[in-house]
Length: 254
Image (cartoon, rainbow, N blue to C red; front, side, top):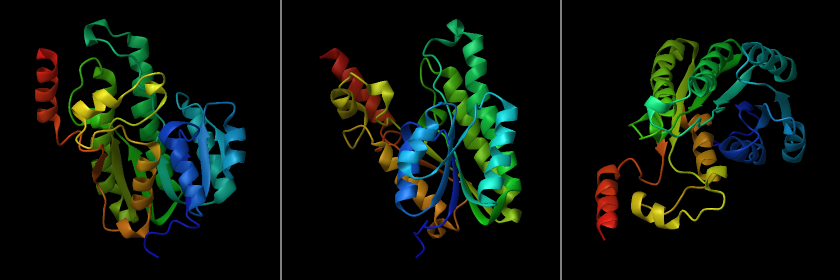
């Protein structure tokens, strides 16, 4: 069963909310053995509901990341899949007005912590393992007001390619997924329909579960010849950027 992830020992960082939570739920449902990590204290309750393990880890603390992998090794031994997903958005503002404290936090969590996870995961993975980084379409082109976030995710895309080259000899694949607009807390209280019709060719915001299934594919043996790739999951958002600009201008002129 090349698409099966049943029995695959999987770590998902940032697994207590959003895309990470949806992915954890999907992997458990598909028979994977899952550990989720996060800094939320209620992570243990979430894991109990899902039927997986939880290890609390603050990704701003290198010692917590070291401890995470120490505990993972004790709990599961060597891993088959690492979903390097923990991340934050930071603030939305022109770069000239950026708060450097927030900038440093975004870079610490989105890049430094992800780098450390990659480094440590290499030491505790089975051959034919799969590491999947969560990047973003914002890392593929600039987005006004999101300079730090865009820079951090662009770095993840490049890091994925470099890690794929270095870890190929270890028989470990490294890929990235770049979600586009996905339903999350950001959209709470808003109706994104009109906006999505303008900017997304498929005409809607994505569901977290639709990203989870792509993680499934890249974790499975069906993707055993894919490494160093960055796969947008965006409803055509990146493909239609030029058309998007035209639509927004036409809308503004109406």
